[in-house]
Amino acid sequence: MNDHQLAAHLAEEAGRILLAVRDSRKHHGKELGRAGDAEANALLVAALRELRPDDGLLSEEEKDSRARLAKVRTWIVDPLDGTREYGEERADWAVHVALAIDGRPEIGAVALPALGLVLRTDQPSPTGPAPAVPRMVVSRTRPAREAELVAEALGAELVPMGSAGAKAMAVVRGEAEIYLHTGGQYEWDSCAPVAVALAHGFHASRIDGSPLIYNRPDVYMPDLLICRPELAPRVLEIVAELA
Image (cartoon, rainbow, N blue to C red; front, side, top):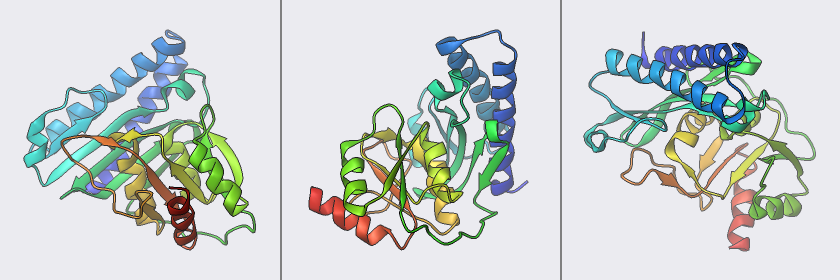
């Protein structure tokens, strides 16, 4: 099983576990999120340590080891992206499995288990034509002011949505054209979505246009932009003007 296949397989299997935990009705609300997170993380960590023992590993739900910093290859995973949405039995949550090579998000898969989908770096799909009015996905609970201002400048429609992975994949799937985030995230929130978006031909960068680099000592990532490539220059220009 190559790295692309492994990422997709693990994301799908973790998604199945999360659905089974939710369907069991043994947990509810925040407790459901904690239980699902723990079981999905156990699967991912055990599998990666067994199948890729020489690689580094960074998981949201695992104590960080600085040993990963000496590795050329580091797996970066989020067992459950969108705990709130998962606990509320919504569909806009995800599982992220990515491999960063020399800090670049090279390989990854994002599962959307409630939709029965896995988007992956080795199976890019063509994008259709952009609509006349672009759509921008934003947080359904706390949309960033910068995103609202960019949407206003572009004449874009705001589309509230849950997890970071769900928002990024909405762009890849053609349900939106722009995902701009300025509220701060961590490496596991974006590595797999960025890998998938880049493989599918989309633009992905920091909001100043610089590349997104992973497997750093400080895993905090202030911002990112994922969008259709033809929209990137204008979006970056507007963000620079606002700054």
